[in-house]
Image (tube, rainbow, N blue to C red; front, side, top):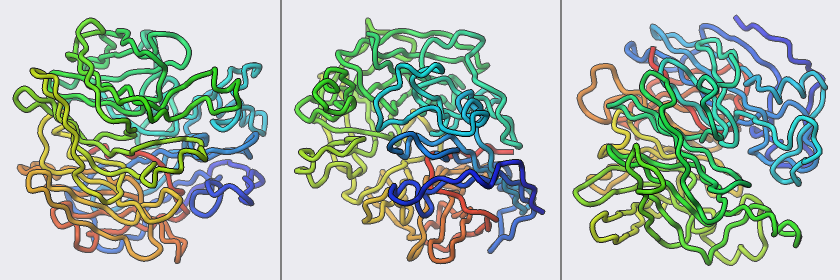
Length: 470
């Protein structure tokens, strides 16, 4: 049974030029609910919960150039229970979505256009399109330049912007960190205009915003992710900078400055700018972190590293053949000596690192990334499982013309070892034009998936996902 909700069919987005508006990057415009989906294989009896993935899905043709990061947030959810699966997709109904929906057209331009300082609704739209977090019994849809949005499960309806009873005093990162032991959640918000450019917050396990403190940065930067350990929080002041003076010269507002070092700030969890310590390393950019943990006097960070990163392509930046290619790296910061070491763990291009999140901030043995295809578009042709203890990896290839996204680890109930569980992701078959939810046994990743759930409409490529156990 499939139910449709009212999205006008006449809403179409041009697919003539922009590759992010074409193929399986193109948006869909129907919100559906579908029960009793076809399953190839067998869904594990003890896998019970909901997989939800966020991603960009523009409602209307863009004003000017469209960037993949601009699209309105759309959630795609598959609920699994008693060996059966259902699917639904819903827009995140932000204020900006509703204003444009009522107007019947785009009101805001995007990342590739100058800020609309004269827009009566404000210069930017919170699209809530990037990631998700479950904390204190609430699912939040996230976008790093604004407030999170509360989402109701399992129907994926938008409750509204979430501001912690008026205490939210900054933007809210797309990648907050929840301590699996204490239940606390750490997040930050960066600013493009007002020093100190960064604010750091801690939320209690009960969902109360406990503290927000300023962290001083010399220049506003894009800070997409960060890390926690048992006792520390780690910020990354990387040289992807915002400089309004560049715009006056016809240069991009946001640009990578490869002559600047990367700085990593380590602060006690409940500390502030007075007790943060900064460590310098080679110039790079990190979108996503796998994990961090403490080992003796050292803090160890594992993340996907790029030697350079420009949101907008810069001709003179093309001299670096590795620019924009992410690979798994490790950093060791010695809190006693101040030394920093940096090591590549694998030369294979991969991104969207995930792990068993019951070990966030503690030493983990296993990590999982999406293996990138040799393609100018951000396509993932398989999954990599890393054994960080043995320095080994194994790869599952989705197959010719099949591309996936971020895989989330769902622990088996009662598991006693770290990798006892499942990896879950969406895969789209370009040959068959069929989208699927695919479930792998994480202990046997090179085997065929244990289950493939056929989705009754196309699921466009997107960003980050979450598993919320029943």
